[in-house]
Image (cartoon, rainbow, N blue to C red; front, side):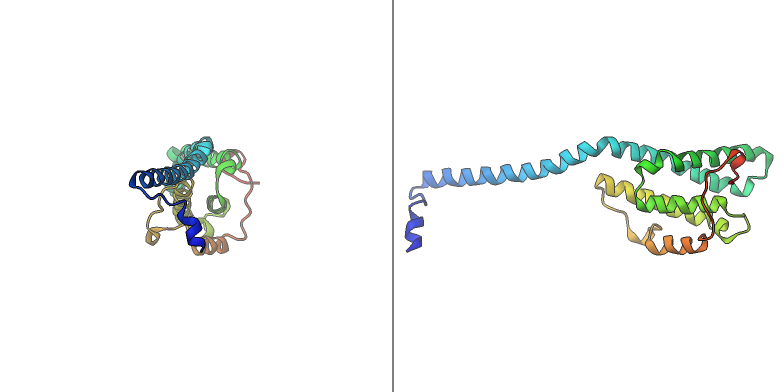
Length: 187
């Protein structure tokens, strides 16, 4: 009985059926594009933040790599000033712009790297600097991919894992992180 009531809304000729299907298709297309535009508009509204984040990550990662590369040569007079300048740059980023744009994984990796700088060079924490560098690099890569909506790279080569972060935190748990003072030495 209800079907009979609905039949009056179903067109009986081909021209009317084509018009109804065209209207339904247009409505579906409109809502599909409207929903996808929301994603685009959301990303566009975040673009200033994402750009600052990307620029900050691309500035801090070479500093961290330089510190790691020069750490074994920091007592060499020809390398000491470059090493100290890189350490000072690291702390500037650490307490400055990076704190504004980093996600929780990059923050954790930055804390770990800072601890490797504060640790005595004979300490296991300081000897873990290369691992901390790789973890930070991978956490930054993952953060950028997540922020920009890019598919994440293979998990097999990912050093930014909770287990690796936790392992390094255990190694460095007794090292406080404080701002560096002149000469790259902490308080």
